[in-house]
Image (cartoon, rainbow, N blue to C red; front, top):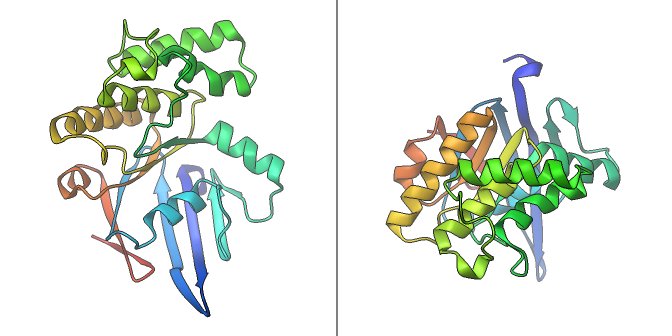
Length: 228
C-alpha cells in the first residue's frame, strides 16, 4: 500500500495504566493500517482496550510509546495546536451516546463544528442541510435532540461527524445504545455515509453480525490486534 493511500497508521502503540501498586498493560504494541475508503471493525471483550485505542487513534490521548500517522503525518511530536487542527479537519467521531447539545437544533448541532473551523454561517447551514438529508432527516432539521428518537439523534451525530470532510471516521459502539431494529437502520446510514464520502473508518462494535459486513475485522486480544 502506497503512503498516499494510507489514511490512518498505528505503529507500535503501547498504553498502560497504574492500578494501586500494579500496572495494567492495555495495549502492547498495536500495529494497524487503514486505507482510504476501507471500513474496519474493531472487536474484543469489554475492557480489552477498544475505546483506549480509538482515543489514541483520534489524538485525544497520547500513547506511552508508538506512532499515530494521519494521512502520512506523524503525530507523536506535534504540539497541541496542530493536534487540535488535525482532529477538527481530518477526523470524525461517533460515540455510543450521541453527545448532541440539547439546547440546539439538529441543524445547529451539525453547523457548530463547521463554524469552529471558520466556515461561514451560510456555508455551514447549506452543508448541514445536505448532510441531514443524506442521513434521512430532511424535515427534522429544526428539532432539538429531545424531540428526536434515539435513532434520529444518532443520525444527527453521524451527520455532525462528517461536517468538516474528515479523512478518517472513528466510531465507538455507534449502535450500542439502540434497539436491534433501530441499530440496523443507523448502521446502514453510517455505512452508506462512509462509503459515499470515501472515508477510512475504524468502528468498534460488540455486534458480530454488523462486524462481518465491514471490509475487515480485527480483534483486540491481550493487548494485541489479531486479524480475522
